[in-house]
Image 1: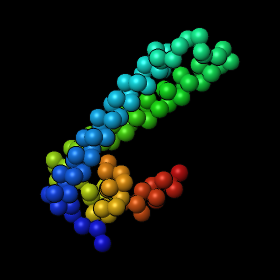
Image 2: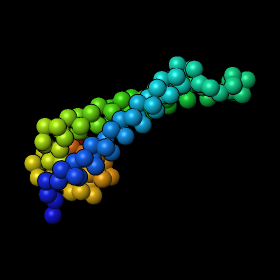
Image 3: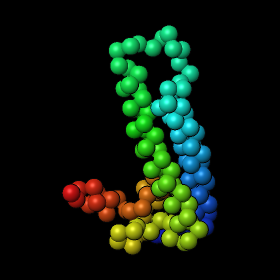
Length: 120
């Protein structure tokens, strides 16, 4: 049964979230350089078969995804301060610890998340 996180658990989640923000912001910086064509790859080793355009588009897509994730993680850090961290935004029940350990920035319990993803 899910329950409200203890203060020790909240500290653990907060540490995980801060580490995640740090990792993602480093990735975002690298992806920005790649998307702008500032990769550290030697220009002579690149092929002219459209691979550069593909890699640039991929970098832009990853950049967008990572920026969204950073926003979600920051929101989760705000929830730790507000006292609402770990509570499902859809059903208001506590999210299971196993889900929060796997995805500390989760907004919903797994059942509500599945329902949200299944709806059109």
